[in-house]
Length: 155
Image 1: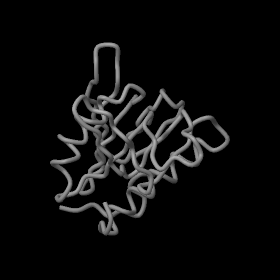
Image 2: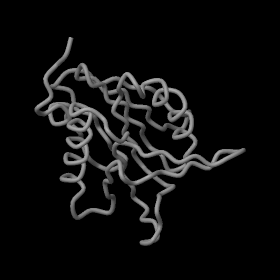
Image 3: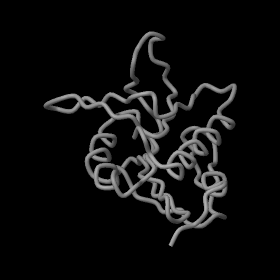
């Protein structure tokens, strides 16, 4: 979301840096919020700019979007929460390549993960700075302490 607050941007940047460092030299690549994701729905096409995404299938070099993300990350805010939790989630979870959709809280160290399983997507919670999100799909772990580095808790 253009013009987001510093807290939102700090968290999104921390996620991008943490994932990027772990994926360096590997097949999958992390992207920031400047790269849009295309979602082909039955009646129309949607484009979203997630706060971070991981793609393991590279698109053509001159393409302006990607349509096969493996991981999508949205940082929740008051202004975007409803869209992130409903509209975007509904769209993202229809992407065949999607392994996990992460919703990152700003006010507290908490991440909700919608993970793809054979039975469909299941919701997982990771809470507290000591928690670590296993992202087996891309063979990395994402510690919440890194996501929330330099982010003061709010009440």
